[in-house]
Amino acid sequence: MATDDIGEFAWQKWQAVYAILRTATFLRLLEERPKRTAEDPLKKPTLLSNSRECIIELTHRDQDPGMWIIRHATRYMWFKKRISSHWFNSELQAMEYAEELKQKHALA
Image (cartoon, rainbow, N blue to C red):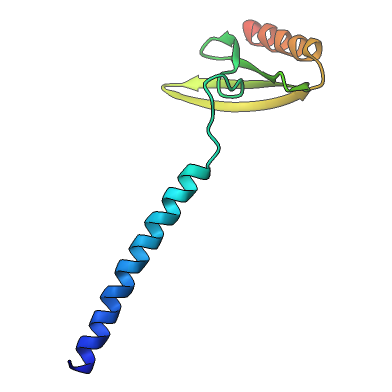
């Protein structure tokens, strides 16, 4: 065997080993990745208003009772542009703010 043949053989062998390791690592990472369940409340927020000018969503997790999030967005064609995201300590505060936003955009 010539020196160039040995170098080419080593290179091909290294590429094959690298491909196997890369695939094995990728598959292991896929197995370790945490699975999201369909019941995840952050995945499906409660829609409070769904007009073109004002989309208001309420997000809350039962596991964290001190986190209430109101997200305000507008719709343009098929895009949603998030305008603001406000965090509250109680449901009452969050709902008051959501009602304020609804009234503000109903008058506009």
